[in-house]
Image (cartoon, rainbow, N blue to C red; front, side):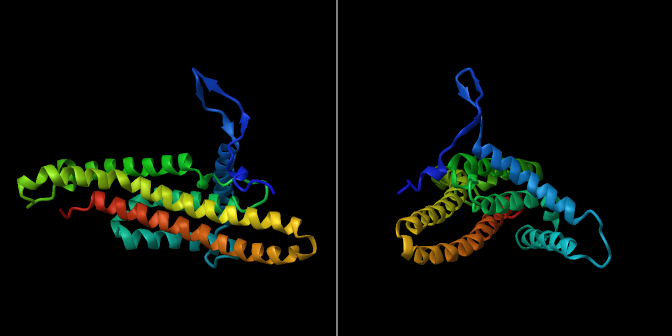
Length: 241
């Protein structure tokens, strides 16, 4: 039986090394590029001929727009629409990347800590930047709320710093684990389809059901990741102490 973890192996496509650093173009990089191109291509195709009475393609793109706008309104409020481009890109990138990984011979880059972790760290840095830009020095009250006795500051400040730094970790682990476990189950059942021969239809039916469930999980995890990112951003830019 083929090792179900082989599907997560990073493979070089275009080797490239600079001063001992491996920055090769890999199967993970390729799927990221394909994901971005797919998002651009689908949106361009759907919005090529916009009409007052939308077609099915236009209605699809508008429903995605409304869905992301709803996330922003629920977490950041109306002022949060200034961050729409970032949130839209974040949601579509993760959602399409998750779905792309369900296709045969594809690669699920959202199952790797390096890829998702880098995205999560970028979100954290963006939150800090937006918080400082919006609140100035008042952003420091994130680590030491107003009204807190100074004697408690040496305890609270490290706790709040650890809490801030743990946010990208929690975002990363949640997405990586959910995407990895589902693919391992699919790969394991797929091996049984062949080894069981005539009885292979049993794991085949199970695999089909799990694929449908994984499609739901793929979109759900993209939604959760986006919502939590917006919530963390709201905490950074909120004027409440």
